[in-house]
Length: 467
Image 1: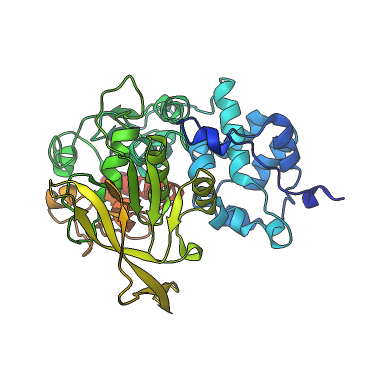
Image 2: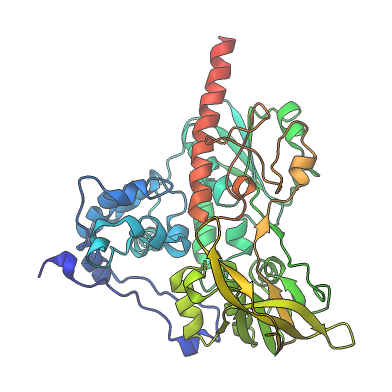
């Protein structure tokens, strides 16, 4: 039998009944033998669709070929040409809708496990002390990057490789943005994985200043006019949570997923040696169906709550990754589908005692092709709970836009930027969720890389005019 016809090599995982009670990583990663076997499935297409489907353009067939040859160092070098955060992307990117979704092998068989192989290579490099970083000679120009999330880190890395002196300004006390505060430890270990990859960015010469709030501590204008930066990239993400506007959302026991996950992930509430206050309650209901909803539900479960997810469409329409939905169901989280909240119920003392919902049915498709949910009249019912977590998406924080004259924004608060990240302010660039609203890690990285190239052209253009 041809190698590619061998079924996709399953990645070892913690037992669901065990992992539901700990914050250790769920997926354990390939062994060298498993990675070689999976790499052997790649067809090495002449026109690899997987590369064009990758937002940062990783040379996927070449790095997999290196894995197949047993040359993990070469594989790491190939990935590093285009990706700043391979161990992160290998864990959290939605490969099934990007590189793996375009894999030619996947037309007849299961696609190559590109994400698992990328993770394998990155983990090998980390555990073996192999670094792909080469610090470039300074070209004498300074660029400020606001935000240390995936867009900011990718932009900073590409600019540093071109010789720019880059400083990242981060509002929180730890770098990483949504990678640090938004994604749970069981999906992305912070100290062993994220901290290492941020360290690799710093090894390129990138400086990171934490506890700096752009729009307060510094402004875009002060960076350009007073601190000598030639350009500014805004990659502040989308951290402003959305709510439904239903009665009872102001009760004690109601959280945004952003706050709940930040308390747990960034502020270490899940660890017994930290005193960070958090409330999962006895019964938690998470409202929403995306990856953030799955993260919040699985976190609440691990903190001891009986947890369910309320989502207004069916399982087919769930926007979360299939792998995350599968893991949540394995761990015992209940999905209450075709259900929508209409009120959060008060226990008479200002605390949550339940959530009133209404049954939904699917009507005609909306503008994105998803069938619109329609309430079923008279179908209201109550779910008993003492914690409600709203995971309904986020929008960009308006602080930077409100303190930067001439910076155009959209009706929803996103910064207006063209396909290269160019904004309405000369010398100011933006990308990632700050522009698009909440999206994926890899799309933000792609936007950061695109903006870095545009910044390079902009500064070189200024030099040419001065010559």
